[in-house]
Length: 237
Image (cartoon, rainbow, N blue to C red; front, side, top):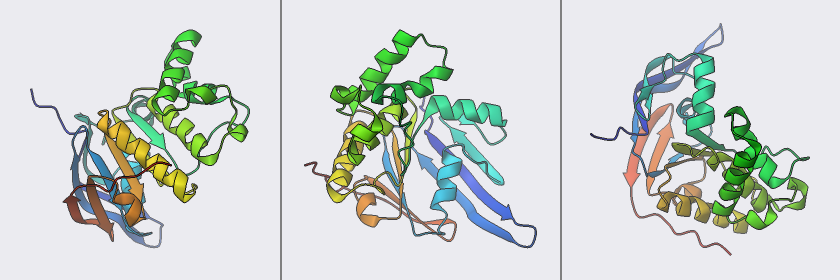
């Protein structure tokens, strides 16, 4: 049996109607991302990449077209169903770390599991495993204010991994990091991909995008190029 693409979009349109004008943020986008790929979606502000990210992540729905996530059609799902998909199948990493300041690292990581009906001991075990995956198990009891920016983003990545999602979706994940921490974060994404994770990275920065094996460029709501090549190696320091 053939494994379906993780992301399978066909003729996706997204139109925003302000009441005065209609704006086509996406114009007939078709995109397939296979399991195990490391793909960067890159483009300037207004190119459609953020709208595309929102639809890939089931944070928004297309005006027209079909979107299958891991073989399941999400185009006509209810908001409740979409919320369930987001929690179970998609791990999000954002530019803002979105950590709760009063909770330790492992308690931040376990949060997505609180909706899964797991016992407290199972939640902690999985949170600790996720922190180990990002090389931060020795900081499990530290609160965000006691961690560097790079370490806080690693906690955010661990939180994204804790549900064992189908897709890791990162939106400008290096935007709040210095150059050394950025290289470290890109090296982590590369390692997670080499471990079998499907990674989609959204960025405006061509240098950041160059660390992915596949680069999809957007402009004026359309995909204007789709190239697979040898990625740049990020050297962590």
